[in-house]
Image (cartoon, helix red, strand yellow):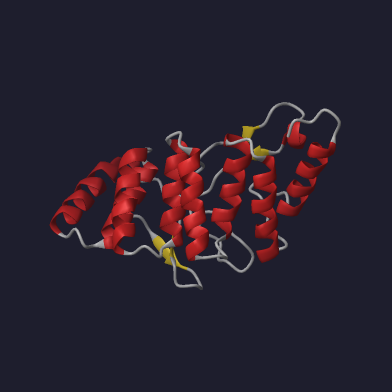
Length: 208
């Protein structure tokens, strides 16, 4: 099964880092060439968090893991952790719909898991359903108002997928309220990104 570590809030967080989009650049000249990626729960180190271990390379036995977890969830359908692990394996192998189904099952058993809501939202986004992704991020934030990854990802989906600049600014400003030194994956501060977006919006002829 996928390795996990337990953070200071008691939540279980995946150790692997997976990019939902690898350096997606916006149109040339827009937003200063900032590139976006969406992160799985636990894949970004925020101040005060422990740096996750390097990604594992265990693709060869993934099908075996999935088979075992599918059997476990069949025999013990009330095992929420098994559903989460199965969802994680589907996530890692880009089986979006199956991941969503597994995460949904786990949330039916234990709905107050912000990490799972976030990971399921990423799967919705990857399957071309950004509106559902936003709902998932919002639920994660409802469960854990300080869930920084959900807030960061929400802004990315609003900006890149839904072209909602104002919504993205609001999402990121709320993140800054929680963590004034929050950083984007590119190494830029979220505050700097917000200021650039506002500057872009104020330029003559801007449709943003």
